[in-house]
Image (cartoon, rainbow over all chains, first blue to last red; front, top):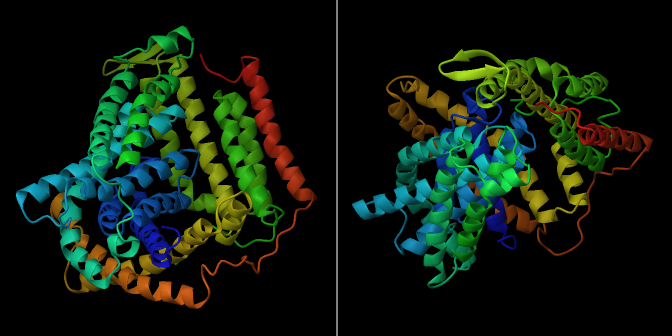
Length: 255
Length: 259
């Protein structure tokens, strides 16, 4: 991707668009210093389905730039990672599940787009929630659910309409990632379906598992035996969720 | 429109080498993560205030203080409810507030405010060129640094065009504050779509302009910015490392933690 000048420019454009819409809404925080009401959350989904990997890097950079305006800290690293996944998953998942254009026209494409949005939002929420609980800043149970809801609601409302308006124009102008990368952005064959399965398991399973650990419903014996239990649950959530994070990474590698 | 926090001053902190600035930022992010007791974190706050005064960036505090107060209050309250503890002070809606939870909440709130303050000092004293130069010297590939810096530069362009579009839509009678939450959310489409279209129009032209100037020509890149290390850089790094060593030692001796 980095060898293509247009993809480099599109990465910068995705990042700046994301940041430009994020920054004005920094004044409406949901969790001060961590997250806010974000109408910009539709941008990574829409950009991903149009610009592919450029949107993944763009979402990570865009969130980082947004942090520059207020709230930069060690958590920005996980913010980058979560948003990178948020921009990476949609085009990979859509490519694995459908050969049609990602513009919702019938019930099946609506359902598929909703699943893409929900899964991407969940991976983003799980990654950031896991990271910030690992750092001991905020409980996973508070953060992950807010991010998942915030991302998915905004994206579900705005993405279909944005895609309808923008996708044909992008395709027509030759800036679609498949035109620029000549199909090199997606894995081939059965591996992709395994990827979808592992990714879904890691995301939805990870969200449920993380909530259970974070709320103290599930106690991890290994952490207790090692004497690593803390009030923030940093090690419980940090180590307990590693299998889910590993599934997500493996699923993404196969997609 | 000034959206970034950078303040153009002639201070010793501004003159630091970009590598020192980025390294100190990372080190100063780590230090308050090692301890949580508010009393132990207090000297770090004094140190940051000193750096803030030296760099002349305390004026930026005026821009962000409501945010810092909200951050502090919210973090304090959330950990008061979520942290356990033995010595109960009172109960609220079935949740126990203990002496330990209040102390921990105070420490965590102070920690987050300190981390925010470290970021604020960095952003007030570091230009985007310095950030990318520092990251590149620390191993970030040139192309990634270039993309990041291009993105930084485009943000005000797109924000300005969004503001113009908002005003144009308002003059046509569109009221962004009217209707239910979903209706209001959908009204943002009338801004997002034109901003997107402006961006798309720029994309191709920018790529052509870059290639015409030899971008990705495979030659070694040069820069008009020259940075050199000075004694000040050594001092800054020693100060940043010292806090980490001090807090690590305190932690090792079982101090600086709560509960």
